[in-house]
Length: 212
Image 1: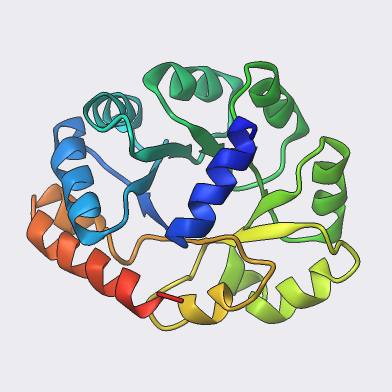
Image 2 (image 1 turned 30 degrees about the horizontal axis):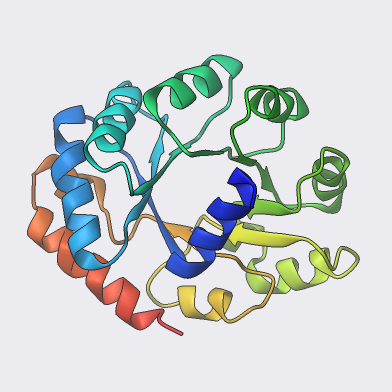
């Protein structure tokens, strides 16, 4: 099984991917402990802050069996830094063929964002068939996903953007959906305030409510 297939299999098992924005890398380890205790040993740490690289490195070192990815990867430099820090996969908000090719060249799986058929076809051209659907709700939600994906029966998606406790289950019931990304169980304020017990409770509730 390839690295990409292994990661996709794990994402299907976890069903939810916490999308994390973190300002202090020292919070990464206790945050990941909360995720693990809550039953969700997976994280997408976004490059929206200067702390992302250090946070990925700290989490990857402390929890080698946890599935840790890097999100909001939009430059080749971030590809390199995320891989060096220990990220197992990359996620981007849009589809940039140059960034995808660079990730492929350095052998790290990437899931670029799409919300239209042209981007899907561009991704297929590069051999990708699991894609981020972003921004999911703002783009049209499940109705758009259904209409857009019909001509591409082999493509699967990770909806992110506007996903929450109330609608995640509907997305996950769709066979084209591998997993859903969301931040509702990892609010940035709770991370910054160190309220990891509350995060654990939110994660446990999210896992329970989206269980098959």
